[in-house]
Amino acid sequence: MQYAQLLRGPIAPVFTIFKEDLTLDDAGQCAFLDFLLESGAINAYFVRSGMGQMATFSYEEVKQIARNACSHLDGKAPVLVNATGIWDRDRSRLPDPEQFVREAVELSQYAESVGAAGVVSTLPEAIPPRGGESHADVSVRYFEAMCDAVSIPVMIYQPPDTASEYQLTPDLAARLADIPNLNGVKASTADAAFMFDIIWATRGKDFAYIVGAEMGYYAGLALGAKGVLGQGTTLNPQIIQAVEDNYYRGETDAAMEAQYWVNHLVYSCKNPVRFFKEYAAEKGYPVGTWSRPMAANPYANTRQELTKEDYDTFKQLYEETIARYSSLSTAKR
Image (cartoon, rainbow, N blue to C red; front, side, top):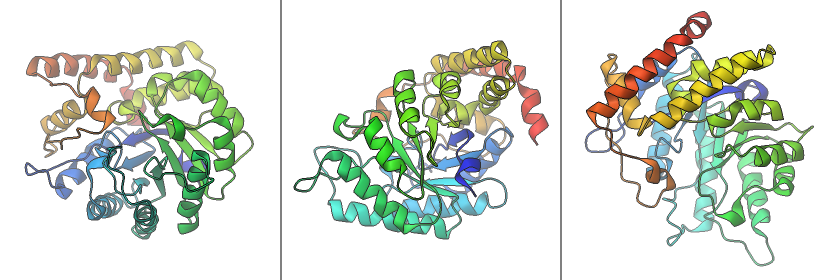
């Protein structure tokens, strides 16, 4: 699949389904993917995502979830696999840099071998510069190795709380976008100035900017972004697709209204992962709600307890809001 087809529209950060003993639940994961397919509005599925607890996986578990998702979605939808080397993002305990790169290369090759449409890697915070290298040089060296390893598109991921010295700058983005087979970036920010600077720096290159916080998708489209990846692209991709469709039709009021509801749902849900797992189970998909501890991971900072009252209140808002855009998902099936 060409990167322009792959890195567009709503891309879902797939939540990981665990058993009660916190091992991967392959059957539950397939059920959850089936539940997501029902929306009819997701363009691609990103496994080992940040909201899917990417930093808690072992090397073999990354292969397991890639194999399971690619097999289950074969012929149904493209899969992006996070092939970053193994590290729990504890900056007081960095992995061996050579092993980290080797794992990223091997996991990328494995993902391609099982049918992934593309691979993703975070900016290489785990790799300190060698003598005379800048942090930007580290990122270029790392992504050159990733891109040399596979023939499918490679995508950069800048997660929340990425160390400042490793974050994208316009100069770094321009250098990275010149690497053959490096076709896009997802940055977890709705900062319009940041989006503009990166999109401007990579204009005219085979490189897609993916909005990494769906609250800024309307702004991102105006700046030239091609797709979006955030919690809403898993929970309510129909509404996010409506933002895009209305924007390209020139119906700006309708696009902005859809963006309002996207944002309102984000701001109203205390724990989207827990909510949506419970909701999937309620709708007849056998999905457990267990999650792994993530003490050293910034995604852990946003998790809150979800009471029954919280669940019921958000469920009512969610279903009422989705109903406004239900005709889109029906039309796409």
